[in-house]
Length: 318
Image (cartoon, rainbow, N blue to C red; front, side, top):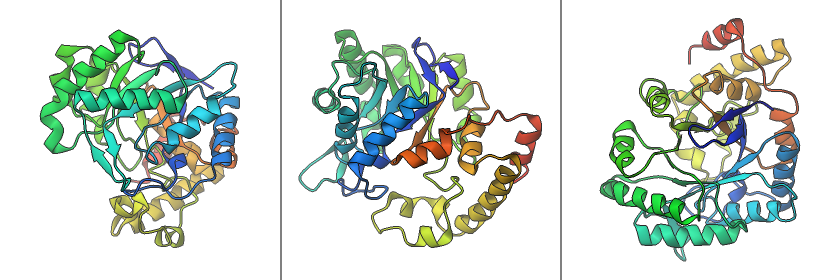
């Protein structure tokens, strides 16, 4: 698999990383992607590593720690472990509902818990996961805490997720921002105007999440499947899964499937490859929960989209 350098970190990462949100299962009470079989999740991680993936992106907020625990079990006994990226910023109580906290004391408790669940001595990339508006005034202090954790050796590199340019400018004086993790897909292109140019200018590595829009661009999503999603499924609140966008998106995916069939590819592969067409994107996080899903995307090489293919994809009018 192709690899790219992740910003200024010096890390060479495969262009696809294993996204571990889905394998968190249904443990947390504030949104999930449905139940998962832990043994299949571990097998999916191992299959992705066999096919050249060399990094895993997880977070405590995925299944109230369960995703990190599964990743830790999957790493146990490996002679050569992949890079492990995780995050801070979400904590939970006895009701298992996620609460956004980014004060330094909470972050320090979180990093120790993540190290224990992941069964590693150092986290390769540690990121601030999310900042609710009421916590925005704390981002400078939170970032200084991450800088200290790097100096102490608990984490090797530090970055943020879901930050805008103004927030990046506010935290940079305390220490270089090494990576940013924003959403990016054919349906979510907001980072193209400001975020990607800014990151290129400041040598900030970019790893994008949800390139298949949590399965909508996989080619396997139907109206019936969307309508049957459980009430606590996080996609129930995604505007792309709601009308009037849903009908438009299903029509677009039908056309994407047609292109994939013509080219001997899959819609999922085209969707992921499209995000990687831009060299400013260093890697794409793709969520898997079963080995068969890994094979569906990575069993053959990701398509190298030329000008003609890109023009055809763009002609769908996203």
